[in-house]
Amino acid sequence: MRSLFYTYLIPTLFVWLWSTGFIGAKYGLPYAEPFTLLLIRMLLTMALLLALAAWLRVRWPGWQVAGHLAVTGLLVHGFYLGGVYYAIQGGMPSGLVSLIVGLQPLVTGVAAVFLLGEGIAMRQWAGLGLGLAGVALVILEKMGPAAAAMETFPVWTLGWVLLSLVGISLGTVYQKRYGAQAELVPGTLIQYAAAATFFAVGAFGFESREVEWHLQLQLSMAWLVFGVSIGAILLLMWLIRQGAANQVASLFYLVPPVTALQAYWAFDERLGLLAMAGGALSVTGVALVVSGRS
Image 1 (cartoon, rainbow, N blue to C red):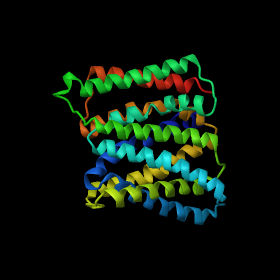
Image 2 (cartoon, rainbow, N blue to C red):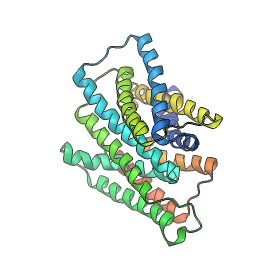
Image 3 (cartoon, rainbow, N blue to C red):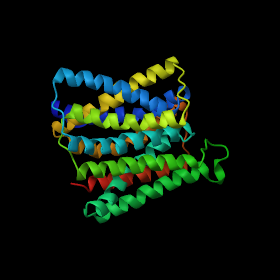
Image 4 (cartoon, rainbow, N blue to C red):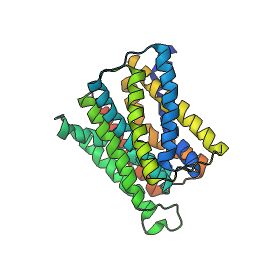
């Protein structure tokens, strides 16, 4: 029973927590602009992590390691979250956003070939093709001739979600290339500080920074801070220390369908048969890439 708990239930809980980040973003964005919302989220999370770091008396990394952590934070949190939030605010369904950024293992695998000299198996190339074909089918249904009666979105939102995908993919490769062995809490705090700086530049340079502290925003912010920024990340690191990282990787491709189900329940986001087939293709493609890695 204990083995079942560690091997399946906890990794599944992490996947669910991670997928709720897309839903929480859509709940909060009507009351604040994306960079402003993310800046507040980062500052609140950093305050909690600072208190935790003081209580644990953590060892802080040196300047060189901190610099690598900052770059990773800018890519993995800054570009990734910024792109996701602007895409959702622009009208792209949160389920589709999750599906596109869920291609991250595919893009990371290709980037690792060119940047790190890693090899890639034929099944992983097949997974890449399936993933891209699946996303193309979803976009075709949402923006094609039959999309008039469905929920559509502006073309420019694709630019933001692609920025998000590139950010988290390059950030993953960078972390692998310059992987700093910093302690969990201070390392995460430095990453969030770099992302907060990026969001501050965006908020003060391009947004009005007006916030309507509606109850819905307060609840979504509380969940994004405690459930996602702290809960999901710390749970992931706990799983890695327990030796369950492979199970997490194997289950991570379930994030898009879990998000799609939540978006259907919360926002009545619907997918037609073509989009559902495309989603299944993309999930299968990511599964091939993930299961093909050691």
